[in-house]
Length: 377
Image (cartoon, rainbow, N blue to C red; front, side):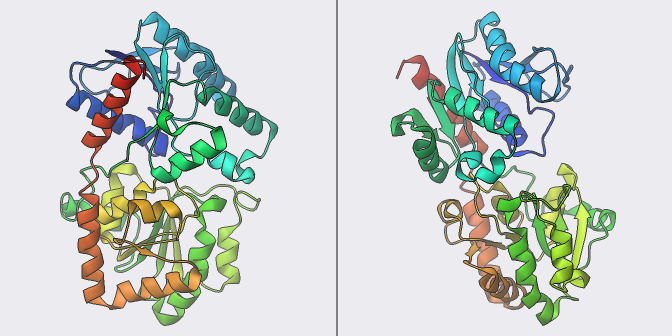
């Protein structure tokens, strides 16, 4: 079986789509070495040196930027799949071509732009969302990453249950309580991290609800903000619009700026150490397709507090402290900081839960989708 995979996000390993692409491709090579795998790359990614053994890379398309991305998705990738004589073209993110000359599988990680109109601001974004939404319905099969996301896809795209398969994500093996810990202090020094701290790592857009965490820290800071400051990690955007509210200004208005440290972008290689060094990881997002960062923290031996987003109840079960509001979030953070028996129990539950998720299983279930499509089911 020959699978052509859209590689647009290959050079973006810090994004969810980039991580999914890289882990899935490597795991498919392990579980099904007989597969013929071709990675179709846009023209700006030349001669990638980090491909798994046995994967062939080719370039297609003409331009970079937004117009180049649309051309690559809608024309160049589909043409390349035909020229390669692939059995299946797999688009591992929501960027499906309207027409494809070979059987088509699309992975839709989430449908956030359809659920929250704030993510459709601007003519191009609205038009693109309409295009890929219509195109996804023409796939032979869809894959998504949680039952929560599957229900939203069924509702928003009008897809039938049997057309959508769920394949969970998994933390990488490098997220571990001890493996690689000899580098932790170097990471602490690199980012000038305090001895004890609560961590947020992620994006800063509206649905991430970092404002809820900042509000929660008015209570935590009052209790002992100097001992347990809040470390906020991630590349900050241009603030002060509807999609990206000004969080730094909000922290100043809440009078907690003395307890908050903004460390900026974190190299992917440093993330396991960052999780291990933190006393608590907080993930207050309103909506996620899966919520992989929470599992990564658990796999690193760090207790987790999240919002009450439905997907967290599905994926994290009772291994995370799931809360409804900022006051409850503050209470959960303080409890995990000062109650060692509770902390130990949550760490053990998190480690046990994280171990149940595996990229090998994800690849096996994806292979089953390919086989189902080849059978015409």
